[in-house]
Length: 386
Image (cartoon, rainbow, N blue to C red; front, side, top):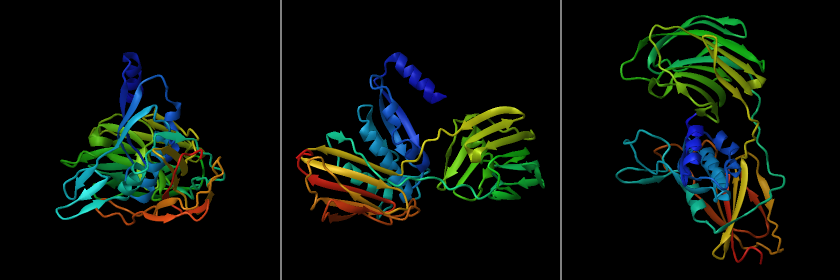
């Protein structure tokens, strides 16, 4: 794995700062809020040179903010972090998401921009540990059913010998433009096996994206895919889809599709996807075991310095939450400034203006409400202990 080899070399050479990259789905970011707490405090520092979620929706923006709370809490390891890409002209970009879109007449900041700005406007000199009691927890709902889906980006592919837990499906040819073809086989079992053979027959000139085998609750926001010929027909990649965003489940391995070759595919799923084996021609190629990390969709961080304090709260759940701020000094926070941005988790899209902006109010007491799918910043002056 390049990540492990890179860090091994950095340790051997005593590299001062290692440049990491992070383009991940919200699920991964929420699971890794505390990622850098486990890094060596006496080793190389980290520059998270390219960091973003995978879309411009509100849920992605909140995931980035929760992750940044973790970056800031581990600022002794994470020396620098930057969003990428920053600017994109509509109609002249090959990549999304971007932070700020523009055309010849307008500047179109995204929701990601607005939450990043709220974060940047409340920096401090010190991070103070925050204890959150009774925060809402997030757990994925169980899959209602399991089926198989097939798609292709640049190849005509014949799929044969298809079965799900021994129940056969008719052979099918899938060509570019068909979209995802969902097969009429299904099961409600937590453990199941997908078997099929895939034979690429022709390649579409100029399109090097391969074909994929989808399984799980195909068509829902929660499923998996084994993708053959991903990244310009260079890799074999185990992927998952959570909250609509597709992401790598495991590191890719080198792979190139051969026209006319039949690939014998077998996928064994156990415990509703907590364990998955991927076999090609009878050989185990990928193996996944769920690490069991809960998503921290409710996160809080407190910074202080320059005579001001700022509490940041991310609520990426559907639950409205009442918070009571309790300071050790017993000081009242009535009159504290509150900046809040809230939106539907699916709101927001590339090349469009953000569907919501932040609003300012003032606390009347130490108790306030955190809206569902919101980012809230509470600011008050003075030294924290006073």
